[in-house]
Length: 438
Image 1 (cartoon, rainbow, N blue to C red):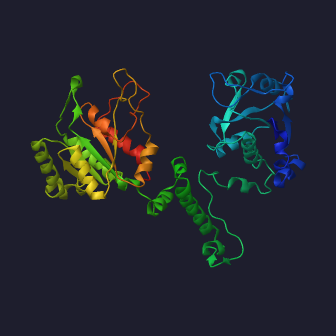
Image 2: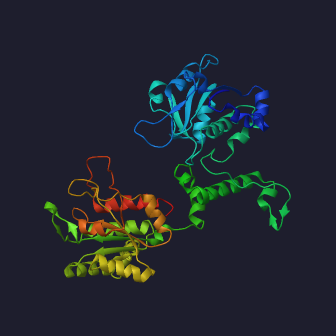
Image 3: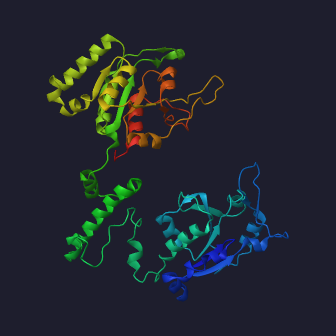
């Protein structure tokens, strides 16, 4: 495999490409490298390669002329220059899947960014693919290019010595790697697991799979959403200890004050389906309480009758699962009383999160306050109670949204039609906040 490296600092690669397995692979002809420096194509007397950005701002931007001239002048290898990869934070994530894909190329051109990055017209002029190796900020693309080289070169036949070892590492199967051990058998009181010393390869493989799944859940739980998990894998995860952020989450379904037709604020009636379904959703996601808020005495009596039927009366024996869900329901006369109850129960006031199908705008149609993110709310769940507000009618009244600590963005905000029933919105919101692991 031949790598073309386009960089302002070719000397940066001297040591890493001349060490260990990479040096042996070069000597064996498994990998080859050539370098091109855009500064050599600069036409002014200072050999400039960067200039100030249009529109102002800090830093400098790589100039197009020397970079494009360098890329067009690259000599083809076996009739092709291969794919052009620009290492930039504004690119496609570099994953093991992409590494396998790039490893199939005979030639690969890696363009190392510097300063504030590339002139955007580069991607219009040439078939350059932006790729990002991570979210940390680097001085330049050389370290990122080296990561791409390491990940793709080790997949070349003969590079690792044992072909299987290149496909058993972390990320190769969508999970982190299992723990590894070597001699001595015991060190400072810590022993190698017995299963690894028994010689039973089936048991060892099962142990490694289990440890891989658990390590991923602990250190990179986001990867589980994309990993192919077996039923046994899910059983392991279900039985393993884990932090349950849902224990700090509560839902309040507001029937007052809410928006009615013609932009009026008022009160809506309870809906049997809303109570049942949101209770079931709440129990499924393991949240700690579901407040139903209405100031109307007759509605509170109706709610008490419904709950009594299902949690104490005939409904309990008819459908125990429904009774378990409806035990989460806590009637309240107002949002203020719900907050006070929650504050007393948990010892500190909740972080109140509003929801709305529309952005909160002022009279000039400017966003009054930016929406928070689901990540921010998840962080709040780590150390304090969070009360998620849902509105009936046409949504939560503006005066309530004004008092919220944060407001989540509307669901399906990229499309014009946005009229979900409140129980469907409840399910979507809880799933985005908690997922399968909450």
